[in-house]
Image (tube, rainbow, N blue to C red; front, side, top):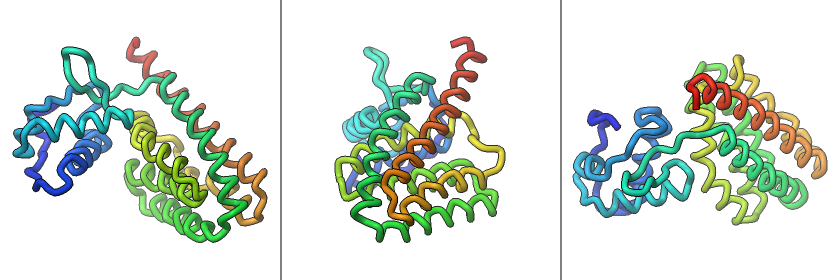
Length: 229
């Protein structure tokens, strides 16, 4: 990890969560790269903290899949592999197909927030926004489905794996040549929800995530092969 990343001193209120947020921002912005070591003492010094809250924050990120602990070596930003990202998308399929069915059957009012989020995806494409903005907006669409399902467990698991999914997408740089295509792939899901057809909504999101899974996995596999790993 570079000495130059500008972690700023933090107040003590909600300290561990704020340290974790700062670390997530640094990782997902690319300022700290996959495979980089996260030196507790260095981070603590830059934030003007003791090492304890930094260590707790790193443990939180370990549970979310962004960070891994290597015995006797410390914490490192996780290097995303093709197999790990494939497993992650399989888990998302299980959660989100169940979530969209519940939403379609029991919470049609959630449609308006999903339409607004799709409009946000198109707006970002129109403005040529950066990859991080597109990925965050995409993940928010899927989070709204989990939230709208009314099942807090779905939402809890989604939040736990969200950052690892973002990291996988950011590592490959882009998914579609045309950024509008990312927005358009969500439209069949919305159409099915609007029609009140739970079977079609489940099939649409299953297809949507499987296509993304295949594309992301293929990209990362090619990167691994090029790097000889």
